[in-house]
Image 1 (cartoon, rainbow, N blue to C red):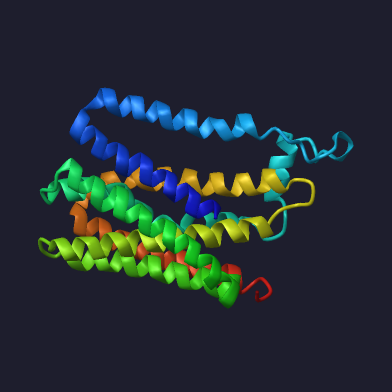
Image 2: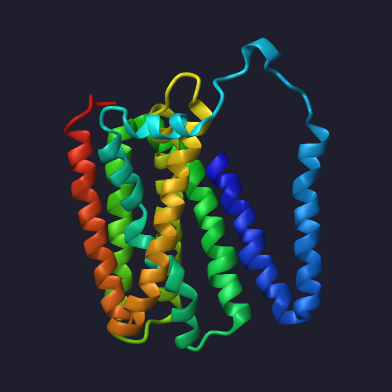
Length: 259
């Protein structure tokens, strides 16, 4: 639900607002953005119930608490997995809109294709991924979702050999966002497992931050790679990164009990 909710918010931000900009310009866009922020703040103001008694508060968060996470057995391998698990598709997601612009699509069309269709598929796939995770278990789901990421990267590499049709683009967008939506559920779930007692919130947040920081680095590098190698070269590189992530995942799973 957390993952699906975040993609629903992305749908509003990168889909609805992008289309609003196309029709109404920057002024209306900024007003809508401010309205969304105010709407998001309302639950924080309305929900003030404190369910934890003062004498039951969790451990105080210090720098030692952060560094202690990395000293846990297997956290080095876990950190490497977090940094690479999305990497095989983050670069494509980062360069998807420039790719569509270069293919000749307008801001309105891109908003519908990626901002609305793509994120809606991601939200739906995240919801479905929860059931798959319960059925297959964490380890098998991690492998399955990563294979979907590699498949999405391969698909974009394949269609980029020529100018793809509109149907091929929509298929790729759905494939890409669907794989990403499922992958986030796997990472969120396994991150909740890899926490210390008393530092659950700190450890979970730290792991998610690692994935986002890695995503920022990959997004920046993908721009450079796209400029130097072209889109087809970028997509090929993303396939190789996905395969490397699969090897890292296999290394992680070989050293932990099956689940």
